[in-house]
Image (cartoon, rainbow, N blue to C red; front, side, top):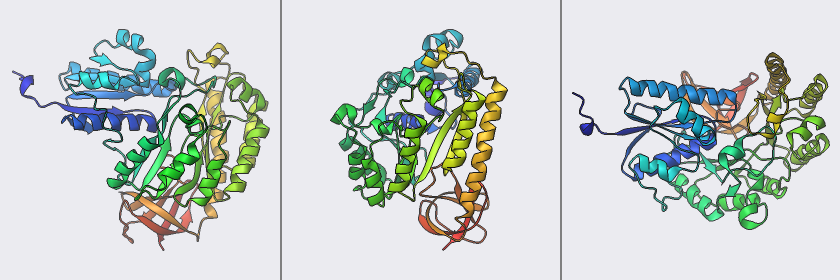
Amino acid sequence: MRTKSLKKNKINVVTLGCSKNVYDSEVLMGQLRANNKEVVHEEEGNVVVINTCGFIANAKEESVNTILEYVQKKEAGDVDKVFVTGCLSERYKPDLEKEIPNVDEYFGTSDLPNLLKALGADYKHELIGERLTTTPKNYAYLKIAEGCDRPCSFCAIPLMRGKHKSTPIEDLVQEAEKLAAKGVKELILIAQDLTYYGLDLYKKRNLAELLQALVKVEGIEWIRLHYAFPTGFPMDVLEVMRNEPKICNYIDIPLQHISDAILKSMRRGTTQAKTTKLLQEFRAAVPEMAIRTTLIVGYPGETEEDFQILKDWVKEMRFERLGCFTYSHEENTHAYNLEDDVPEEVKQERANAIMEIQSQISWELNQEKIGETFRCIIDRKEGNHFVGRSEFDSPDVDNEVLIDATKFYVKTGDFVNIKIVDATDYDLYGEPA
C-alpha cells in the first residue's frame, strides 16, 4: 500500500520560455526554500510546477506537450500533483482547464501568493531579491520591470504580463548586492522593455540612473542590457556605457523589420530612416558596441519587395548578433485581424535566407578577432573545452569562446584574458594570454 503521508514532498520547478520566466522560477524557488520546502529545478520531484510560455505557436506547443507529459506521469502514479503557472495559463486558463482537467490548479503570471498557498507555503514580502538562481553561479538575470505598454500588433505579451511596471532602483540595488554576495559577477538586465524603465515611477526614462547605481555594487563586474525598444531610447545610457567599464559594450535591441510599410502595420512607431539613424548614433557613441537584434519574417502582407528591403538592410548594417523568427499569428493581437497570407514554407525560406546572410557577416567579423585578446568569463566545462564569453556575448544566444581543456586549465566563474587563435561563424577558439 502506498502511504503518501509518509512521503516527503519534493517540488520540481520546470521552466519553459525566456529569461524572464527563468527569473520568475528563481523567485518562486527562493520563496519555497524560505518556507523550508525541498525544491529542485528540472529534476525528479513528486510535486511539479510547470512555468509555461505562451508567446508564439512553437512555445505554446512545447508548453502544452510538457503539461501533458506530467499529467501522464500523474496518472501513472509517478508524480502526485501538477500545477501550471506562467504566460500560457495567464492567457488560456479557461481553455486549459477544459482541455487538460487533470492538472491540480492553473495560475497566471501574477498569482505567486496563491501558487505558494497551493504548495503549502506563505508569500514572504521581506524576501526582496532572494532567489534560488538556476544559471551558472557567475551570472544572473535581473528583471528591472514587468509588463509592457507598447502597442505592437504582433505581440501577445501585454495580454499575459499586463502594463509596464518598473521596480524601484533601491530594490534592484539590494537584489544585486545579494546576488554579488553569492558570487554573481555578471548581471543581465531584462524586462519586456528596458527603454521604458522608470517612466511610471520617476516620470522619466531612468535606465541611465539605474545603471549608475548598479555599477557601485561591489563584486559585480559586468552589466549587460537586454531587450531595449528602439522608439524613445534614452540616449544618456550610451554615455554611461562609454564611461563605465562595468557596463558591457553590448545591447539587445529587437528591431523586428525595416520596411516602412511593415513597421507601420506592426505599430512600431518608427521608420527605416529613424532606425538606421539610431544605430549610427549607437556606433558613433560607443564604437566597440556589439548590437544584437531579432527580426520577424512572414508578417501579414510582407511582399517580396519588403523582404528584399530587409535583406539589403541586414547586409548594410552588419549586426554583430542577429536572430530571425517566422511570424506567428496570435489571437487577440491587433495583427490577428489581418490575413496570415505568407505561406509557412515561404516564411521558413525567408528566415533561412536572413540567417545565411548573418552567418557570413558573423564569420567575417570573427575572422577579424583572430590574434586579439579579450577578457572572457568562463561559464562551464563541456567535453574537452572550457566555454567562455567576451563582453560582446550573452549566454545561450551568442558566440562562445572555446579553450582546449586538454592543453589549458582555467577556472569556471573566473575572468581570464584569452587570445583568439581561430574562429568559425559562431565560435571563437582561444588560449589564455
